[in-house]
Image (cartoon, rainbow, N blue to C red; front, side, top):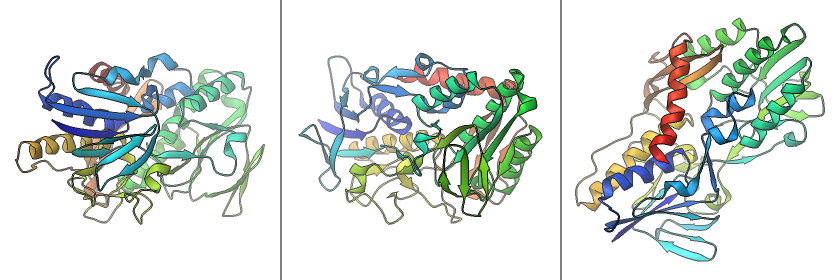
Length: 383
């Protein structure tokens, strides 16, 4: 019996495991393939919904599920922190026990770190706890300066800070605080979602400014205190309520493994997601993928889903002694919440950025419904 190790039960890992299970032919009493999913968290969070949590539109129980509910015939969830990864021998160790496989799919996502002691001054809204604590504070907020801060690059879910800003502006207006409250977004980026190309980036910037959100590009953080943000361009701004993105980096277990690349991330073949090690793949936010035009792919969940499906398909082709025939193409769409019960569909061919093949539609109610449905269907399909 072949064994496939899936490291991480995030977006990409879940898709990989589910697709592997679908292809396996496993039944209740007959297991033809062993699929082992390694995950340290007991609770699985649907990360795209965290901006909704920030403004009270979601509660914890609506966007979480127990990780062990992923289990199926031949698919086992092994809980705990991965201690070592040996890609050459396709093995991992966890709680002192070694597991060996025939194939490995690494989907551990990014590790989060606070820079400039940000955790002492604001809310990391890339965690469920941080999104919830921000909502607790904004409910008691009686006016002032609300700051959304992108603390470093790159970061996953690159539309999330912009969604958060627009949802917060909506919350402020609906709670009659617009006259004495400003919402500002500070980022080291030259423009919002630069990876989408100049046209979509400008459209998002126009949308922010139309809503009265102050946008400060080219602002790289250098220091933070209880009421002030300082930037490398010499400017500083005061705030009364702060939400921020953390620093993103490789998990320590990958940093100390041969998988860590010169880019600071895991290097893979861009079409097959294969690493330098035979039958070892890496997908999702931990990868560094350069398109044919030389741009770096953003860390977007839709890509992790696509990559998981490609890898699962090709592993089973290999197991059947057939040539892999599916390749990853960076195309897709996602929805950016804009407040007022509307969202904008954004998507296209991300391999052709610069040719205006990534479009951002005008926010609409159907876009919001599409994002809502994606959340509901994710849990229905996978848990």
